[in-house]
Amino acid sequence: MTDSNSVTRPRLRTPKAAAIAGILFAVLLIIVFWLLRLSVPRDPHDEGAWLTGNSGTVALALNLVPFAGVAFLWFIGVLRDRLGRAEDRFFATVFFGSGLLYLGMLFSAAALIGALIIAFDEAPKELIDSATFHFARAAAYSIVNIYLTKMACVFMMTTSTVAIYTGLTPRWLAVIGYGMSLLLLFGSYYISWGFIVFPLWVLLISIHILLDNIRGRRVADVADNSKSESA
Image (cartoon, rainbow, N blue to C red; front, side, top):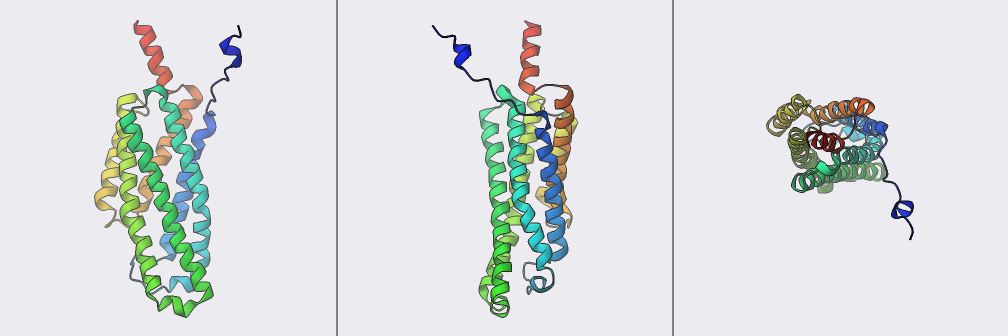
């Protein structure tokens, strides 16, 4: 009889440095939003003057979006790996779903803006005078400032709740997550620098996980050891 251990592959372990993905996502997203904020007017009814003078800067920001998206997927994977068997199905569904929706809307908004740049290069005057420009501009604005922002709030609140109940992060970091999500939920329309809230929170979480992984273990491993010691 063949020993089952000899035919079972060892569990793939997430490298400790994988938490750097969250740091990379935060830095890239801050750069993307900063470049767009400098180049594209906040008013969704603008007449498209930025397409003439700032299209190069906007294109640079859009080219960074896919890299930020891949890094965000790694960040989600790092959180789930850290939770291990302590992951709750309900919160895991909301956490994972909101993260994917956030990423999907980020890509959708970037695609709309990129399409405007391409169409403007082909027919500048026709695009600016068309209803298509105003529709795409308003759609990108709504996605980023309403739906994407709300998904970021859900992701932050869910992750902070999981952190409190599982010890994923210190309690003070989870409380900060609640506060920043409420700030983003109710104040994003009035605060011009509100775009920095979500990537800044991801940056804080990632730095903590990176430092904790260097000297510690996953949440599930700590929980298992605590149960064995109490028994």
